[in-house]
Amino acid sequence: MEKADHKTPVRPIEILCPACGQDTLLKREKVYEGFKHTGTKLSCAACGHVFPDEAKVPFKAKKIVPGFGRQDVPPPPKVFDEREVLETVSRLCRHCAHYVVNPFLQRCGRSNREVEATDTCNQFAPKTNPASQDS
Image 1 (tube, rainbow, N blue to C red):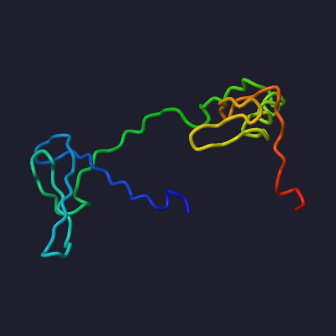
Image 2 (cartoon, rainbow, N blue to C red; image 1 turned 60 degrees about the horizontal axis):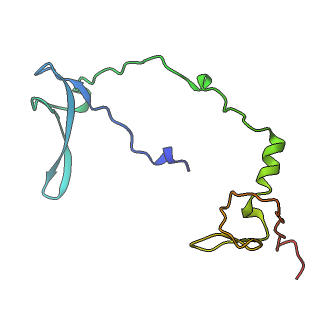
Image 3 (cartoon, helix red, strand yellow; image 1 turned 120 degrees about the horizontal axis):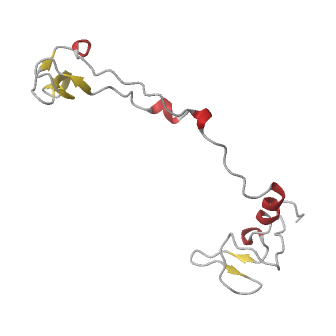
C-alpha cells in the first residue's frame, strides 16, 4: 500500500462568512454527550456564527493558478559520463577488501589511516564475495 492510502482527507477550512462578511476560517468543534461523540459544531472563527451542516458552509473557491507541471522540470544535468561513474564507484573504499568498519571510525587495513566510505586510492583491492566461495 502507498502512503496516499493512509492519508486523512483534506477538508477545506477557508470560508466567506455570510454573517460578518469576512474572509475567515471554519472552526470545527466536536460535540459530546457524556463520553459519546454526537456530532460536530461548525462555526465562523471570526464572529462565531454557527452553520447547521457542512452543505450550508460557503467555502472559499480555490483559485486555479497556472503553474509549472512535470513537463516543465528540466532533466538532471549529466556531469560525468557513465564509464567514469562506473570506474569511480567500483573503486570506493567501501568496496575494498582492506576497508575496516568500526562504529566510531573507519580505517584502511593496508595504510592504517582513517578513511571514509566514499574515498578512493590507488591500492584498491576488490572484496571477495563470501557467498560465491565454497566452504
